[in-house]
Image: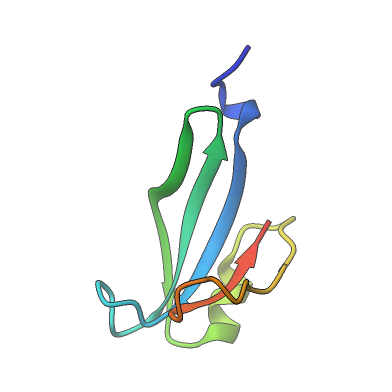
Length: 78
């Protein structure tokens, strides 16, 4: 059944003080799958990168960042 929650890849993208939240490190939950690719409304904020990493849901792995990513992106967790 295409389009159900189980068909979506969940990832968290960590940003270094993005323009819309300039006072914190921010993790945004993204969903990728059939017909969908983009950020959700789920956001985690913290004063430091280390603190933010501890606040991420369990089970995700840091895959770093791509050289093509926006400069504000610190890393991606799958």
